[in-house]
Length: 146
Image (cartoon, rainbow, N blue to C red; front, side, top):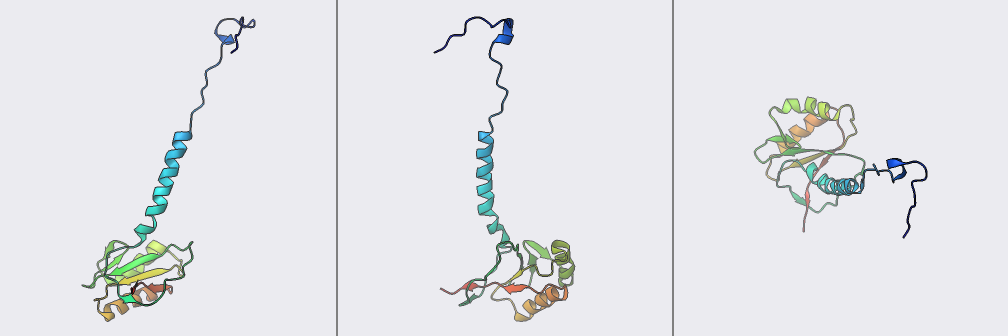
């Protein structure tokens, strides 16, 4: 325990200890790390797109590059087409909408998710529109048989 005698010739308040004006950023960093973890967990779940009953096959999982950000196109049983969760009203507008979303990245992976009860012709129509827009990396998504 120490004792300061006198003001050292400075007099008044100047001799006293100066106020500490630093901001404690530890709580801020803690909150940011928690948010980062939450977004890292939820981001892959948002890629799925519209809910469809996928056909079951014995094929293995896709080998994807972690840096690729795939775009999901879903086709429901009644033939409705969705980009992620946005419904496409006219199939002929699918190509321009893909180009607006992806741009000129023609090697961008696109996941095509068709309901198992969707007519094969409808799936081929959607595939033809995607290919006509210039995108060649189309992968068909299925569920693995158990």
